[in-house]
Length: 292
Ligand SMILES: Nc1ncnc2c1ncn2[C@@H]1O[C@H](COP(=O)(O)OP(=O)(O)OP(=O)(O)O)[C@@H](O)[C@H]1O
Ligand SMILES: N[C@@H](CCO)C(=O)O
Image 1 (cartoon, protein in one colour):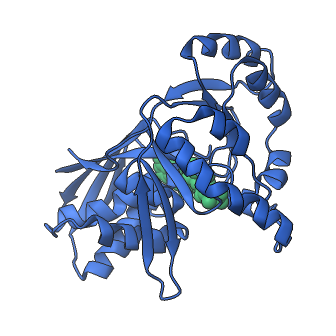
Image 2: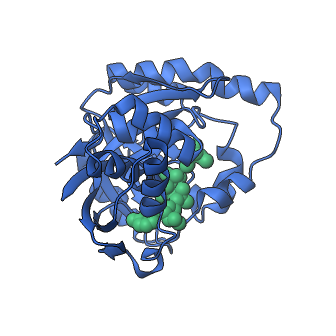
């Protein structure tokens, strides 16, 4: 049996749409075991315990790319990453599926190769990069279809307070609400903040972070499909907020808090809202995917 642990991730980080992503200390662990034939699922929600399962589909795709075969497989999951909440649940499955193909066939692990395959399957690299390499990264796919990622340090003092509601937002749905075209002015608004946001995360410069956070590429459209977005933002800003953004494609809202003592107050105020917002304090994960 082989086992991998993949971290949750928060993609975009406001102005870095489809570019930035950070790995967080919340995990999904997957076991892969060769069986005589077919596929068995253990620990998955019933709706995903079938051959369309993203881990299984990815495993099959990766095996084809490696030109390897297996007789059958049992896939087990122990999952703490909420599904369709903007914390990279699909990336945990994609990354695990690619790792599964390498490990079950004794193929030498190469994180860059795994990243390339995972990026092709996921379609954008901002979640899969931090899920594999850990920490904060900026990624792109070149014109020649090469997946490139660069990793940055994040100061360990950062407190990522994930505010997770009881409703799902699928990435597919959240991409549909965005316009096909955006203005040059809006592109500049986001692009001009990117370098400063990265520097603020590297250096724990909360004053800089607070000043430069902002986006006009996806947030203005997506906040409309996240119930109680404005109410949650107002509560955070009243209590403690050094940065507030939609995590990935939502529905989780991410609040950077300076003092963990303030979390209880935020929790009390969120309890007055309708959508059962559940605050979870996360730190940056430095390792990315780990074979256990
Ligand atoms: N634990 C899981 N078991 C099986 N399938 C999963 C699991 N987690 C995610 N998936 C698959 O990924 C889909 C959710 O992906 P989606 O991109 O919408 O959300 P997300 O990855 O959580 O959010 P984001 O990409 O914004 O961070 C599910 O519908 C399912 O197909
Ligand atoms: N960058 C992606 C992340 C979610 O998969 C998006 O926001 O649509």
